[in-house]
Length: 221
Ligand code: SF4
Ligand code: SF4
Image (cartoon, rainbow, N blue to C red; front, side, top):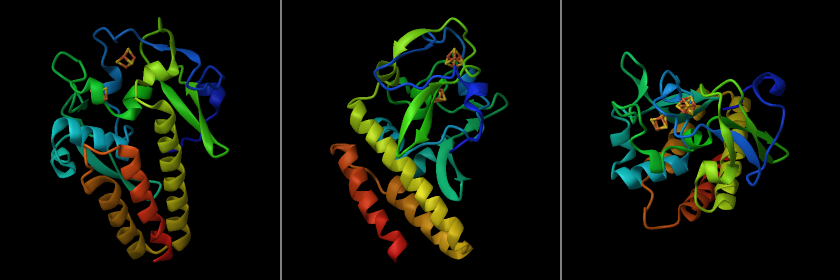
């Protein structure tokens, strides 16, 4: 999801790479769970998030749809996001003690927060969102450590591929202006990247690459 805002209004004005130090570490949050509540539909899940969640929880995508995640349309593409439930509008994975119950396999957006990504020139840079985290006394941390995901270079390449694939697909659907075709393609994408189970024993990025190749045919069908 892209936001059209002025960088100087939301960030410290700097752009970062994964080996840079940035003041993002809130030191374990200490009882604050503000960014796990009332987040609306903003915590969008990518295929790697679903790979991790289904593998670690032993649940299917459909089972996660029963209260943990929901579907929403983002720039013409149907994508899953974390559900915010109940009076408190809390993430389904937030424990009664206000802690993340899936911390080690939490989604990429949760790992990134309070950082954001600025996509440009076929890649992206990180930036620090200065008004999002409630804690003011954050300390510096290396970005790759903060995101805490194995093989960071492969992960970033996946993030880039997924972002530009969605952008391209979104533009394609908008240009077509055919609601029936849009519905059909959305269903295909949802099945291919989210509902079709991933093999937890196989490398995720290889499986994603195979699916991306298959999706490449969608525009020629
Ligand atoms: S707002 Fe900041 S301190 Fe509060 S839970 Fe989120 S990351 Fe932690
Ligand atoms: S998955 Fe964890 S970190 Fe992310 S919003 Fe839910 S409780 Fe918070």
